[in-house]
Amino acid sequence: MLARLLALALLLAGPLAPGLALAQAETGFSRSLTRVVLREAFEAIIERHLEVAAPEEMALWSLRGLGAVDTGLTAEVQGGLLRLYLGGALLAEAPLPSSALAPQGRPDLAAREPAEQLGETLSRLYAQAWAHSPQLRRTGMERLIQAGFDEVFNHLDPYSRYITAEEAWEARQRRVGQSGLGLRVASGPRGSVVVAALEAEGEARRAGLREGDTLLAIDGIPVSARRITQAAELLEGPPDTQVRLSLRRGNQRLTLVLRRPSEVLRSLRTDVLDGILWARISVFSAVTTEQLAEALNNAFAAPGPPRGVVLDLRGNRGGILTQAMGVADAFLNSGVVAQSAGRHPDARRVWQAGGSDLAQSRPVVVLVDGRTASAAEIVAAALGDRGRAVVVGSATLGKGLIQIVVPLPNGAEVLISWSRVLAPLGWPVQGLGVIPALCTSLGLEATQQALQQLGQGASPMQPVLDRARRARAPVPASEVVALRAACPPAEERDLDQQAARALIDNPAAYRTALNP
Image (cartoon, rainbow, N blue to C red; front, top):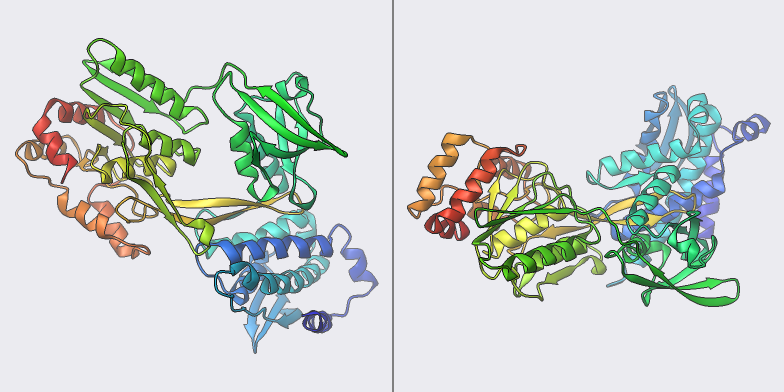
């Protein structure tokens, strides 16, 4: 491979040999750092992204992405060469990176060499672009890298993206901040997780944590930079509970016990009206499952327990996946909650319910709208598919891809879609969204007619639901459009609550909608 990289270097020096002016123009651009950033990002994409992406295609996309910063920069493939132009003049060219065959069960080995080639090729071409484009130099090195990845991800999926170092820092703060422990973690040397910052009056500083400490485990679970989001979730937790941190400080190994603050933002609002428990979840935070379990247990332990439950997920954009699984589990005794599928072996999972039905088999209605997304869609799909709840409202957003966060050497991150969520019956949430059994987005008259038909034992949404549940990924765009048109996405309306109450008040209509 070294010989190939040397050949690339010679060829890249071709049409415009770098001289003193080039060296001066490259001030502020680190080719070595760019090469490593590109290599690590592309290795993760090739190994883990949900879809197969050919290295030669990604090389061309990356180079064309620079045109978003300087429209004079263009790229093409000609005669097996990747060519970079500025204003029509050839700046440099290089052989296209090649794909490698993966040994059975080892996608990581197939990713390594193409990623090395991409890092080497693109970093040299980027250096040429930087040297000759004032626009690129004005916007800075990180914007150059981001522009390349933006174009790559435009071709892959709607949710994968490159996150700049500043955005990544803010995102890590948000992910960790929910715990209220007063610390921020970051990726450190050799894939470690380090304490990057401490609040002056925070619990972490009071407990003796110091900036620069390396976190080894949280509550006995090892942590690493490749799974920094897991570290953030482990730091979060119910209020007034303890978390045990194992860490390294120099040559010392220490264990510190921190207590989470007693006050946290509640993600659940509940009310009991006319014998119905209304539970609205705005986001799936670190304590949502605990809050819902407490609300259900208290309601059904009280004299005159609820005759039904309305779980309101309208406007809920998602949150912590494990919390969403816990919410679905609160209404199920056993069986599949959700599945995930992807190219990488670790992306394939099945989540099983393992608790008890805290609603004690009472009728459950789940309210959704066009803004219901991600983890909230998983809950609605699980309870609908399992016949535990009737879904009411409009088609949901259809965000059914799971991302992993890959930290990069420049402090940035790439967010990579590596698996798709499948409902218990096997249909994909991505694109389709959740189609309700009782649609309210077609207006009052249509909703009233549907309720009347349900009460008579007929479900107007049955053909659409049957067709949606038979869908398998990838679903053709024409099929997605046709299915969602049966109940177009809409924002929440009072009619949703009225329809939910009508179903609980009419057991016959509820039973028909539950098993269309």
